[in-house]
Image (cartoon, rainbow, N blue to C red; front, side, top):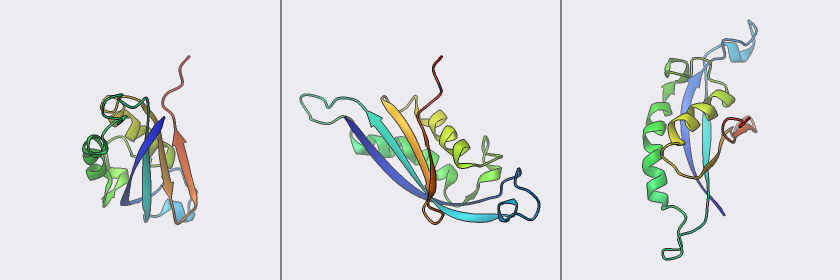
Length: 122
């Protein structure tokens, strides 16, 4: 069974790798949506896999670091692509949320996103 919690954040960034003159080479902003998915089995007594309040508490610090910030200045997000934002969130949450299965980051205005399921296991 999987459960998820979403949060929204507003942030500005630019992509250093974008060609000169490309809109992404200039500072601009987006409304981002992050979805954090947990996989597991509900507790037989409570019927709950994980309390949503506990997920919310784990997400609070990450949301605070991202919301209304210039992402290029956030440590670890100097090149703030959707892919790197997803990895950044995973790195902050995988030890706090047992059963973390995936992080999804999207920009609703652009109708695009990224799904990250953790580092590849060799």
